[in-house]
Image 1 (cartoon, one colour):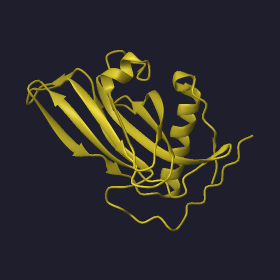
Image 2 (cartoon, one colour):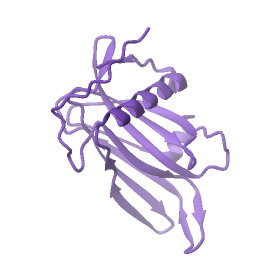
Image 3 (tube, one colour):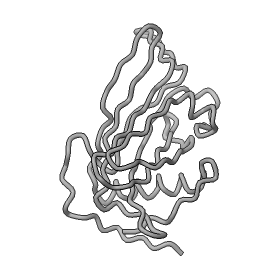
Length: 177
């Protein structure tokens, strides 16, 4: 059985841009009217502002909050991970139950692996999303989510969704704090 304690370190500052939990919005071949907007794709960039090796888990959801898939990467010390939603769909990491889903929330968590466990510890990330339009693009920072007991519960749920989804057969250790 996995052990999980919901004790959040008091050392976390409410940074405006960095957090172990950030959130953005994905688009892929999305269009709506009033005013007419077409978003072709979204590029996400995750940066590690620490000297730690981090496990990066990012999960996709439909507009109604239904889980659509997950991908996992290693975020090297002071490193960068970048991907497109078209690539995530092509590789099977975006698999919404509603095949017509063209946008929704993206939630990203970073964790530190120590042996067979994952911890939040001093893990931090910064993220940017670039929405690609025909003939242009728009970039914005993803929003850092403050750590509370409820958001920690959401981190656990995201981790469990990713474990169940098993992106590309990747093994995820248990989350422990």
